[in-house]
Length: 326
Image (tube, rainbow, N blue to C red; front, top):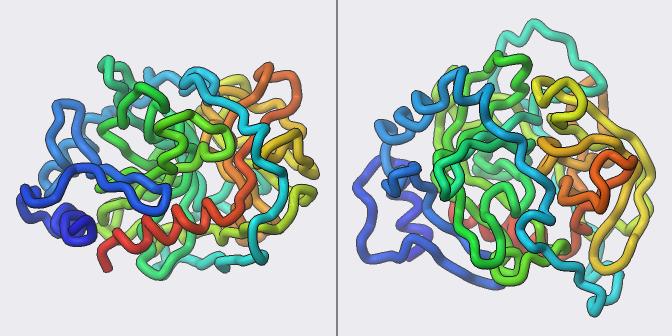
């Protein structure tokens, strides 16, 4: 039922009344994406309304979302810090089209990383960082759980839009509107830092009317690769460049407790949801996502944490991919 409902969302048919707007399975929860006035994004017409809502002025005034602590997130000390299965990986993929991009790849700028914009339940506008991730259906954008849902006692965000390689107001590949938002049920119920993961399923869009991964390519993903790895984090921090361009940090990671990893980095608000990448290639602009920016105990003090990518991220990834239309 859930798969059918989402297929209708993307193909433009009326919302299915037979299926609920949210669905939970195997510790993952999804919702049909909505506008701020509560309409399900079930057609190209409504998706276009979302892109038109996000004027340059609204994007510029969107507040960089604070780290996950604002959602009353919790540590998970009772869970032993260890991989919970064999290591696995999904390989990065390049765009399937020639985008005509005339800007060379930079260490701190990936086509597959961008800003997301959304409205909050109180009517405010906010932003996070996110990145595309490779999959067979080529529709997935990965971010933090707190960039799709407020956490315990909160709600899903609305008018959710992804702008790949946003820079100083420019949208070189256009914009993509989410048709579905997905996160771990434990993030929604308890705000577990270890489950601060989110994936959006994107409708066709952008400058060419195509799938997002066909347009800008997608990072790979790795899980159960251990706690100490070399990583490059990318995002749009408000304390560096005002959140208007991508910045990066590079560090080895370690386990601070629970199913989390920590790295040295001075990026703050706005970088939430940005990818931590193993083997980032600054010639291609792609790497393997092995965490996302979740929170910092004292933002700007030189380090932040992300969820350790174990079997839970693979479960969420499979869940979202299974719900995606072809």
